[in-house]
Length: 381
Image (cartoon, rainbow, N blue to C red; front, side):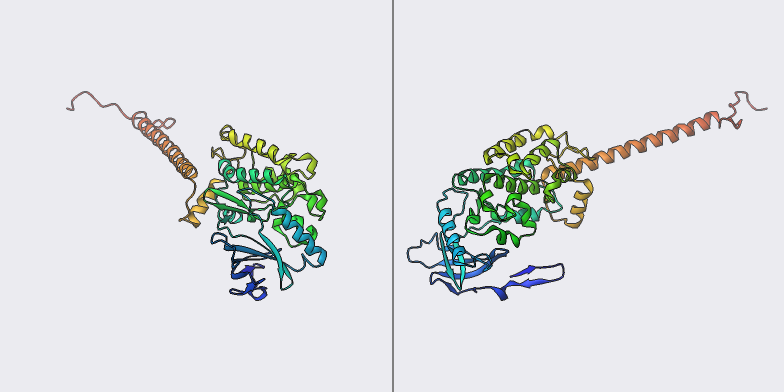
C-alpha cells in the first residue's frame, strides 16, 4: 500500500508494516491484508482462528497503534481499560471492540470487519461536484445521532470524523467508538492535519477531562458542514467568514454558529438538541429553495449554491459522471431559458430592421429630401 506524503512523493508503507499477510498475531489471528494506515496506526483485515469463533465472526479488523501512542505500562493499562469500557456499547450502528492485546510490543484491538464506503471517500468522490442536499445528509446524520445518543449514556466518542463513518446499503456504522478514553489525547491528535478540523477545540490541548457530548456535537457539525459545502471549516475563530464564503443560507449559518462555537457552553447541550434543530432545517428546506443567497438565482434544493460554470466544467472534464437529476434538469432549463431569450432578441432585431427598410422604401430617408415619387395614373403619350 502506498500513501501520498507530498505532491511529488509517495511512501510504500509495506516496508514499515509490523505484520505481513499470512503472519499470525497472538497465535489467534491470521493476517490477510493491510486495509488502512494513518496517524494512529495500521489496520489489517484478518481471520479469527479461535475455535469458539463462529463463521460469521471470523472476519475481523485488527488495529495496531503506533508505539508513540502507547509507550508505558500505564499507557497499556489505560488502553485495555478503555477498550473494556467500550465493549459495553450496544447499538446496531456502533462497531464495538472485541478484544485487545499486545504483540511485537504493539498494542492492538480487534473488531468486526465491516465492508462499506467511508463517508470520507463519499465526500471525496463528490469534490467539485454537487454537495449533499439536506435530505441526503439526513440519511447519514440521523443514524449517527441515534448511535451517539445511545453512546452518550456511557461517554462521548471524541474522535468522530468522516473516515470513522461507514456507509452500507441501508445502514450506517461508526467505528473507533470511545477509543479516546484509552489513549493520551495530545500525542494521539499530534499526527492529525486536516482531521484536526473535526476535533473540538477544548480537546486539542489533550485534556480528556473536557470530553463530553458537546465535543461530538462539534465534530458532527463539522462533518455536516463539509457534506453541504465540500469544504472544511478552516478557522473556527472565523467561522462566520467561512459560512459567508461558502454562501450558506442565513438559517443554516445560525445553526452552524451554535454547533461549531469555540466555547462548548455555547453549543447545543446534547446530540438530541443538535438533531432537533437539524430536523427543523430538513423539514423546512423547501421554504429556503427560493431564498438562497448569492448571485445565482437558481432554485437548487440545497443550501449550497454551485455556480453554473462549476457544473459545466465538471461535465466537460468528467463526461461520464452522473449528476443528480435535479441538477441535470436545472442545467437544461437554464440553457432553454438562455436560448429563448436569444431567440426573442433576434426577432426584435429582425422586426426593427424590416420596419426601417419599410420606412425607407415608402417614405425615403428623413433629412435628405429623398422620397419615392408616386406612380402616375396618366397614360404615356
